[in-house]
Image (cartoon, rainbow, N blue to C red):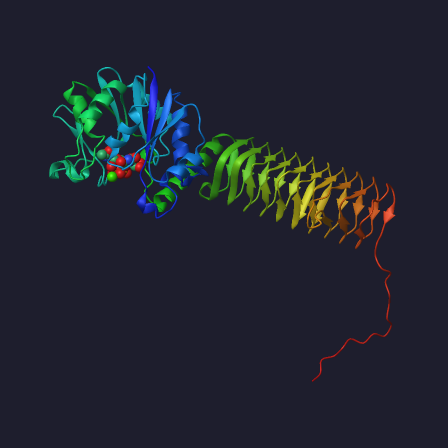
Length: 455
Ligand code: UD1
Ligand code: CA
């Protein structure tokens, strides 16, 4: 049977105390609504329609137009039933409509698939959960035989109903044509004077439908985010779940409570990740890689056997196998480290290729440069790539040795196996196999007396 999805996301999220619409707040680096849309897509629905209201422009901007995605403006927001009504006209020809919430990000695909499958011409499907403290939620009312027959909102519930601990998660799947009909029949004669989506359950029962209820496995699967604290709690839950998945894949995460993946990760086996490592965007890590504590790695590829020592910031870079980077190194976008290179402490690399086996071990800046193989760049070397207006290229060929505290003023080329004496400022090209030096001669003043402080 064909399926469409409606995602409710019109609410402001007052308790977030934020200018940003709630569903744009990020969980594991992705907006809450993005999580819901991504899961919905995996059900291969004909259409996903998002009901939006608060922060309309920001939402449309965050989710660029896609063929399967449509939007329905709800203004003003008169309740969940009213919200679904705004979208349902755009759902045509789908047998089943699944209702999701933009602020309930972690419902597993399997749960939604099972829920949708249990809908038929005679049944509506409802995802429920058992809560120790059900305050605020709609309660599932059952008849003497145990069949669900209605949902009563907390504010409308009598004393007996308030004692019910089985709650409505809000997630339900219904036959589309019937849903359209039931939505016409709901009213706002209730404590909150809202059009409740939950009233369609009672209407379905009246029409002879069964209510197939399904229990959530974990409460986090159906938890909505209303506050920053709840967002942080779900974040830790999700990160821990990710870490546990990585254990099964053959990855050691030293402490699952201090691991953060904010994006997509492809990772090999026997990788060790120490505490407080943040992986962002698209990250690819090979086999036998070791990443020490406090590193941020964003949109980068790390080859087999590489070691990233502590406190490195690596962005949009490609580190080939066997490299050692850090501690305290920064790789800025478009840096490529070929096999077995070594980048040491307080070294910044930008938009440069460092050839196989080359070393930049201490306190250097290399930008807009092409460095060959087996090059040694001494401590404190600066590539002066920027003249205040333009960036210029530096080429350092294979086997070059650059003495410490050298400035290479680009554009400049250092030929194969050349040597640059320490403390030089190189402004002209250096030919292969030569030594270039640009230091003033050392002078000596004999018997020099240091000044003394006056008493
Ligand atoms: C709703 C359910 C309640 C359930 C609870 C689960 C109704 C009447 N009640 O409660 O049974 O236990 O969810 O969390 O459905 N929204 C709109 N437009 C609106 C109103 C809400 O888009 O006019 C969206 C909100 O942005 C939010 C979601 O719907 O994402 C749920 O709204 P919320 O007010 O949090 O839920 P309740 O109505 O309190
Ligand atoms: Ca409400």
